[in-house]
Length: 450
Image 1: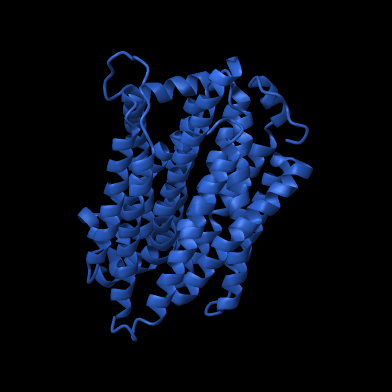
Image 2: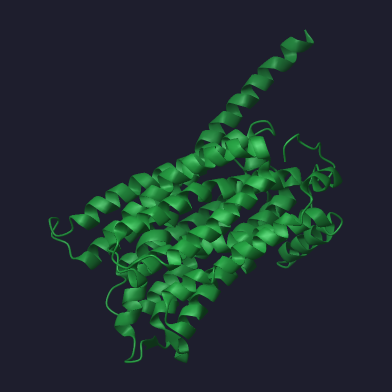
């Protein structure tokens, strides 16, 4: 009789989780198009061209009176957007935890980002400042929305389900990115046949990403539900930073977990910078057309899935730490090869894209799974908030270094090779982390292979 009274609620609970999980997947489907079509492919080369059109005879623009080389403007804007996100994410995260009303905050962040992206249709002529402002708003809003989106995972999936649910969301995002890039490639390649200029085709691709983001965000916003927050003391706007500081203080009691997070912060900064700046390098340094860049990013999208599965298999044999270290060596070799790529040779750029794709998905997926073993039981949410801040909120140094290197040398080759430093330092820091001891120190069972 006890079983009869318990079983129906369990079935209903499982069905409810699946309903929310299916909706949750669609936010990755919605927003990943911004990352691929806007940030990775179109906006970097296009905004750089707009800045170059506004530049003086020496190739400098002067936003608010500050001399900036036109080729560095996009990288600086990305860096500024991440710094803004660093300040906003703890405030929004604290408000979400305090009120339990994540969904309105997710909606506000998502539609702020989608609206800014759709407004990129207005970028023409010499409106580089407008482009920079829209990029800062859209990129910061995406970081905030992803933080809220990821915070739903512990609520909609049991510990046994989380790896699978997280992987499906990741796969949805890559599928959407690839699908929209195919449509972008058709529109851009045949823009004359559609009666469009090249610039107009790019602006339509940018704006359509914002419309896609806004339209499909409706699905998770309909299906996800808010949970009642536990009673808390009234708190000020500074509570988000206080909570973050409290989490960092707690991490000091788990120095090996903190050591891994530091290593991840460094090498992930390099990964995020390569993602955002590769199209600028291909366009401005190698002289490749937009169609070539789109095909290259499509190749990255497909091979990222293959690479993640392959590195996952390697991790089961050799352990996650060794596999991640191997991927960092591959990142270093790939960037070194990128430095020597001949201009005007698309095939070699495709080889570079294949190398990036094979290590991209796996290095990020394995980093997240390895960190999950280093989190003390019962503190998953706050530790993963710090992880998210490291993932999205601290990746400003790489674009800044890229922009400064180009500003000082005038060479995108020097700018791209400067990013090797992040992978070399990240490798050194991760190699020093005794992960088996770190897992045990966090109070978790140590896997046979880690």
